[in-house]
Length: 299
Ligand SMILES: C[S@@+](CC[C@H](N)C(=O)[O-])C[C@H]1O[C@@H](n2cnc3c(N)ncnc32)[C@H](O)[C@@H]1O
Image 1 (cartoon, rainbow, N blue to C red):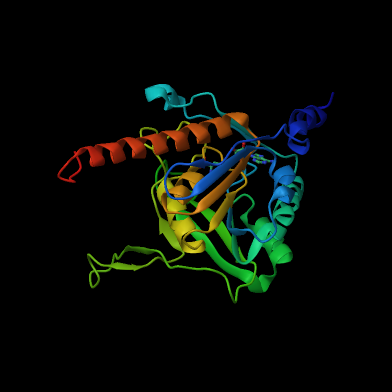
Image 2 (cartoon, rainbow, N blue to C red):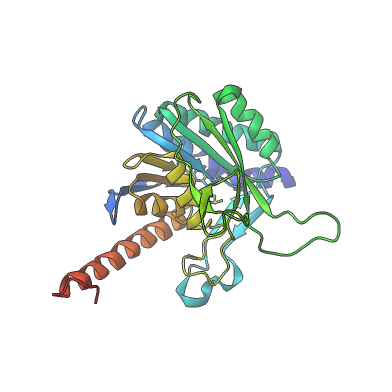
């Protein structure tokens, strides 16, 4: 078997229906959530028409690697065994994979809906053209830069320290947007808040961060809370079709949006469910303690 045929056969499950196991919606805090172990392409057509306010997708970036839990993830009971394949034979194959999935999801978007695709330097320029075609150049909203800072430098080039988040509206004239407020940096406005720009300075998670699940390429809650709050109304519905450890689902739930997550990896869905359940039980425990105090003060 040639090298490329061997690789194709390893990737076969990507195009096959993943035995989807629908889980019942869970209610932990604000919004309800639902997680499906399924291929995005298979689950998307099952969504109700015009039901989603905000689609945030953080798909594999086509790095050519298999992504695994960080080496120190085993510490403090974090998942150390999670992996996903992030490899296509060509960029054209990768873009065709993404095209099919975004296109299958558009009928589920509300007229005021917003679509954000998280990517990096490898495919950002291809994805921008893809979204121009699928959604219309006039519906381009933002090219957000997530500047995460952490990590090494390079002697050969400027260190690559940002991801790209491409944002399009279903209809740019009526899309939802609530500008997030962030701390001002200028001397004149020191101590005040100002509207965020398209460069989001948010550190990436270090291996010891309390929210770290051990899932590879987990994004920070701060980033997802900002995006969900900006592009979906209170009580709205958010979809993350490559939800990994469930960061988007947790952010949405915490700020009162309903959320739906899909992932091809059963382990990812398991980690996301555990994360949401433990968040719910922490809240329930602290709620009980508050009620147990006759003076109404938190115990
Ligand atoms: C970059 S990770 C997402 C990380 C996530 N944002 C987090 O904070 O944990 C990409 C995810 O896409 C999933 N994935 C890959 N192909 C998929 C497909 N066809 N359908 C659904 N999920 C897929 C992988 O299993 C992986 O969990």
